[in-house]
Image 1: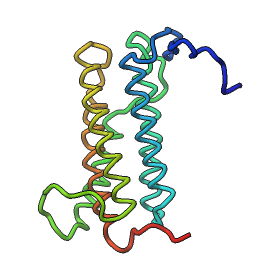
Image 2: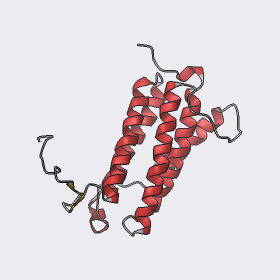
Image 3: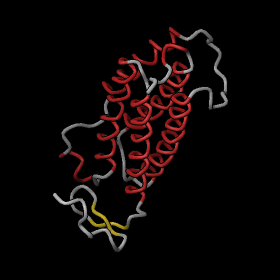
Amino acid sequence: MNIVTKKGDRGITSLCGGRRVKKDHIRVEVCGMLDELSSFLGLSKSLVNNNEMKKIIGSIQKDLFIIGAEIATESKLIKHLKKRIDNDSIRSLDGIIENLERKRKSKKRCFVMPGSTVISSILDIARTITRRVERKTVALKRRKMLNNPSLFTYLNRLSDLLYLLARSCERKSYQFKRR
């Protein structure tokens, strides 16, 4: 399969199912945000020196592909998707969150100034992108283009998880690997 197809040269692309839409269509925009989010997570995964955290980030990236497929698929074709974000996906995030919260020294919830470490900064960027995706998926829901309550819950939990991962990376044991 060629990467260059020239089919998008006029600002049009295809959704899952074949429907052609403008590249600024809200579904395409959200898929682009998910790609951006996954890329920042990939960057953090490449720098982190902790295998458990690498696994967590890799799992999130896989879930982002599932979310992207759902967003790029029109409602009438959703039933054809093999996997969707569901309560099991949320329970998985909840388990990781509970584990990270048990390990936290400070139980205070507060705003932080990003920039303590390279990895925590990248994860904070990923968290803010997640919030942007969350806002746009609410817009999709309002337009009756998306109706998976688990997806909204997942994104909300994901931003919390990324916050906790960023704070974990500020501790010495999760610093980036030396090259």
